[in-house]
Length: 355
Image (cartoon, rainbow, N blue to C red; front, top):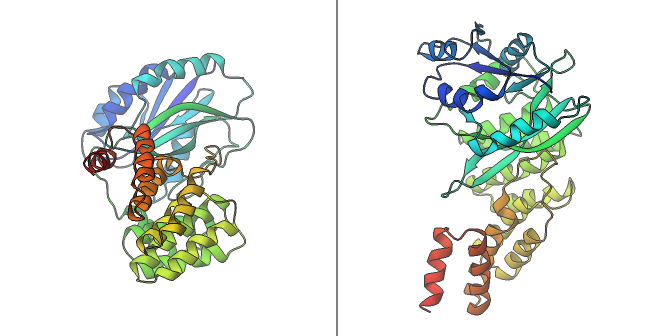
């Protein structure tokens, strides 16, 4: 049975770290904690779970710190988690079963990463991440921010999920400042870094600069197709904020020059036409979203609701505006089958019941 080293980098995580370690400590064979400058009780708490707690100077480079944590591991696989991640109790048996059944030639185990949740706690945003990585020099983190280990070798996809559940918000400016320092130091951002830098600019409402970065990224022959498609979505949001709605639509449609339609983009396009009073076109795009195959193994970000609940609810709105209340009601019931607790569904149900 393979052994697993849990490798974490932390700083001022006294509110999160015990919860994280309580969820995973008994399932792994070794715990490596690398502290990058905590001034709270993080080190004290971590030391109650492991004797392998190390201090490491922060260099504005997440990959540097994570690679240091991996260098201290002695087990077959390195597993990473952030302090505000947890493994839910429901996943425990699957985790142990994976350890028992994993083929010895496996290099990387991809696990689901749930990072947002709806009102009932159901994951509303998730994607696969490399989670167990064979402990060897071949696999090392790259990227100062939004670091990654490019998957290669024998890869296994597991349905086990790690859930990201932050209690308090962190420093919202940290990532943007790292990118800005890199640029100030004369470093050239690679396509992946351009994509994430554009996202940070969008989050900070620097829409014109974000558009400039995204357009440069989209024109580059390099870059991962999933990042290209997602960039179209975020760039369109920037154009909306700048009052350039037609350019926003053009950018959304541009996403289909990279690959087949994604339901997330189809919903964005449907929303554009619905807001502009063109229900017939909106219906086309929402129905396209419903009929789009969800590829959870592409590595891209997935919004599960865009493949059923959201287009169903929006089709209800479209048909209601067109006066076809029977069809509108049918779509609302289908949306309710996806999320019977949804406030929007329940509001619509009451609306139709009293119509």
